[in-house]
Image (cartoon, rainbow, N blue to C red; front, side):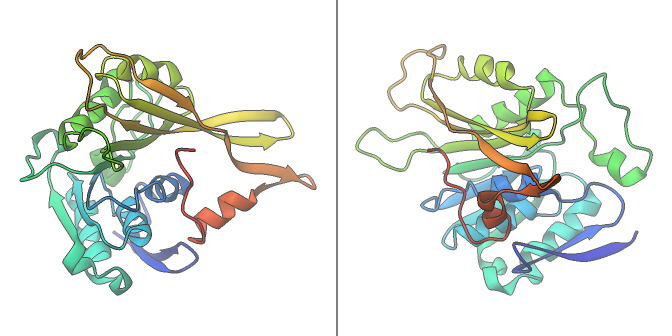
Length: 268
């Protein structure tokens, strides 16, 4: 299989990936830029070739980052990207790649932050890709599928500390633009806390379109009932692209984040 040597964050980080199969896109950079700069231990579930982990490690230079990936081909490049080809991040000392299924992964500790960027294909609306590399990593992402990712993420978070703790654990993820109801319904049964949600949008000649949700959940240390509803914060919209002179271009904020010049200011 052909491997391409690419770059992200304005060529500050090296990313080896297969020419066939899933290719790293904007989603990974946006999610990685949501890393908590105070987090000591971070885990990236479904890490692929490591883009989210790399971006998170770029913005938080103190954290140790565990990256879990079940696909053997992706995992080989995950190791290369995290441990060998980005000396700027001191990967051998900070990154810990694990080969396996997230449902069977049993770490020796809990984490300050869980990052999740699973496949976005919706059940019964998409057929599995024909090439073998894509098919082995392919997940039909219906409501039950994505909820399982969130359940695993919550299980891996460390317990929140009571006030005046100012660094609560965080489950952070990116998902499809049509998932708002599913997100709210799921976290209404997660035991309280704070649920911050931000729409990722494009503004084109045909109007505005929600293409993704960026979500950050912080569990409560004082919840007494699993069914307690969280406090929901609707962050101001993140405009990824807009039309200027008839062409779709990245906004100034999006361009700054994608080039590694600005940490994503989320949640507001």
